[in-house]
Length: 386
Image 1: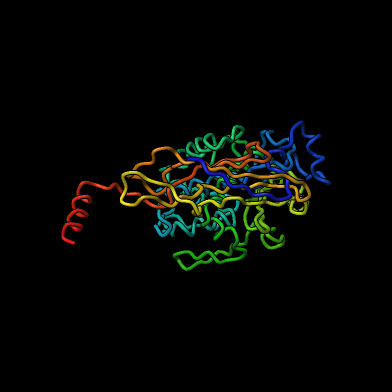
Image 2: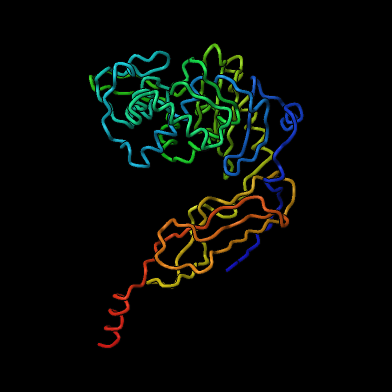
């Protein structure tokens, strides 16, 4: 069964905007070239590339590697492998981390959520290692998981040697891979509860407090910026991966190897400014929201079920250009109970002028239970008694 509906508006399809060629040709996409050894700018929803400079060059990224540390932590929590309110006892190894930290006490116990927040807000190395040891048993085992997950995400030019970003060879990533990892992290809404914190006291069980200030100054000083991760070592220079949202448009920008924090922040802000001014995101189908149409089901207690796109279908568009968009959705033939909520039952595809630019799965928005012989007997008995 195939159903099609059309949406039309003046815009350019996201799929036509990916920029090709070398770094020099791509620099023309922005009025002012960002500072640093490499840079990358893309749309969060569609992944459309707006700007790229040396985006696959392998470079040290310092504390930006904590994007992956947080991602693995949130994914472990979603699988039930760690609870946010779970007490974690800090090892002497974790407490002894240098660099940015919240000065955890060895053998003291802290809530997992507090450790996660300290990583997101003030880049606490000691909290990173405490979480890594809890999730994987050791930092080394956790790093192996980091590298495995990077491969799954398609981060082809990334290798981690620790979970903090402190200098240790071999260890590298690239601007494109950092954006891929941050994009995955942003899918976890709880992250924003931490990333938006500007100033907060970290309370220790022995009565001490450590003041946490967000290392990403754009959280306070750039309209719409609500997440990201800074990084700095002498080897890496000043680095930042940040996200900002205005209206339905969310952008991700990365700069690696700037000469100062001020230059780094200004470059990210300028990238955001120009892109927000020229582009907009048009959402055709919103992920997780049921469609008006329902899917017919055979052999179920109910004849049909609500369906929804698994992820949003959107076009990241230049504001001034035109195009005709069509969303087509096709349900699998012969849908039969039982069907679990969230199970794939079809596909939705976004076209621009007949050319596919994006697709997503259609999933069951509710459960379809099997109509059993006992249900038939019971209904028959009701009918007989009536």
